[in-house]
Image 1: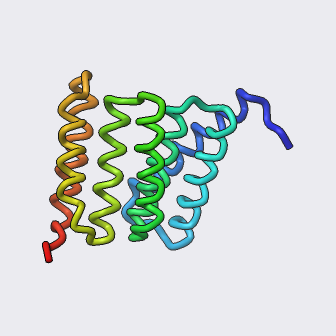
Image 2: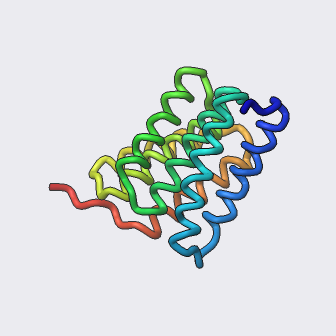
Length: 156
């Protein structure tokens, strides 16, 4: 069953926002976590039908964030890398590129990967180049919160 382009765009955006609402909740149930994961993938699917490359990158970022929140480093890394690959392939920079590196760093921290520190530095460097001050502050705040919550993996 094919959806009209406008309906598909609306569905993708609404699902993205509903996932974000669940991500912000601290009282999620296991069923909420499952719903959040399925909606993140559905969002990415629908953007894949009608979106621009930036929408695809943001969909991959959201999948990565959900997997990180769920403590699943491998799929979080996969989707974060897809996000970064899309940014590079399509010349997407600024806010989205910084968040691609943020997703990679978050996934590395989730898995206890020693690359986390270097990825955080890449994210900070990309954030410093964001043109819009409000966007830059948002990324920097997320990076600060990320490092405050999770210790850096020990070097061997």
